[in-house]
Image 1: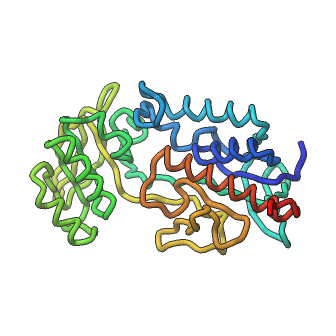
Image 2: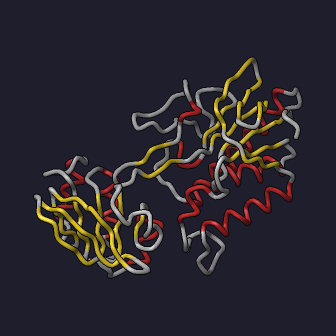
Image 3: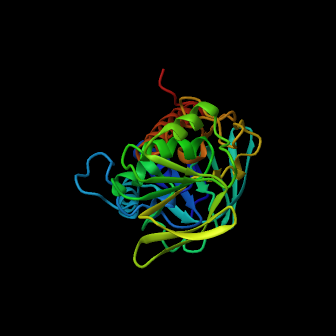
Length: 309
């Protein structure tokens, strides 16, 4: 396999796959590196019902599979490899992987983010079957159902308020005696008639047969079983930013980009869940990938002395 490219993309979620398609379609020599499965976090989405153009829900895995076929058709190369480091010398990036060293004029980080898990028994077993980490993605499936929301920060409170528009049976639990969210946001949750708040409460187990049916809660040292149709967990997000050492990040570790998706290091772009963003959805990740690939192509032309003037 060749080792020199115009564009190397790291991560094969929706953002990375879209970047690969747009990059290859623009005639950039494009390589996408992914250490795990094509699809990233979207593989956890069983029914994606709000992606434009699909009248019926589609799974995240199927959508990303179609994206890969498109990128293949336009000539993008794919390699299963784990990236160990990125460095830049003059105008060339060196990407060291467990399958060798590759070079490129531009690099797009599409490494995503991981949800911080509770560690409760049954959490992994019922992921996508009542356990969720995204109210906008899955809330509509539980309209008028019983929902437990876990967390006490800004995200947890915002998502609880979103879910409270769908159901009047929201139980919000937090392990401490008060929220750590901004006061105005916390006050809105406490005042919402559709949300019952239980402080000093943790979830120790999620139970069910084929889907979530109940959760074991520990409140002030007393354990009990609570019927529920879903458990939404908002205990933090961990952006996978390890390869972006030295570039600007916000206080939470998300990579800061400009409107072109370019980081503080020229030629290094970041897209999807790893970058700062006010809204995180599959459709916005795809938009990030398209924008980054477009401007990466412009930079490649500039570096090759082929820019259109």
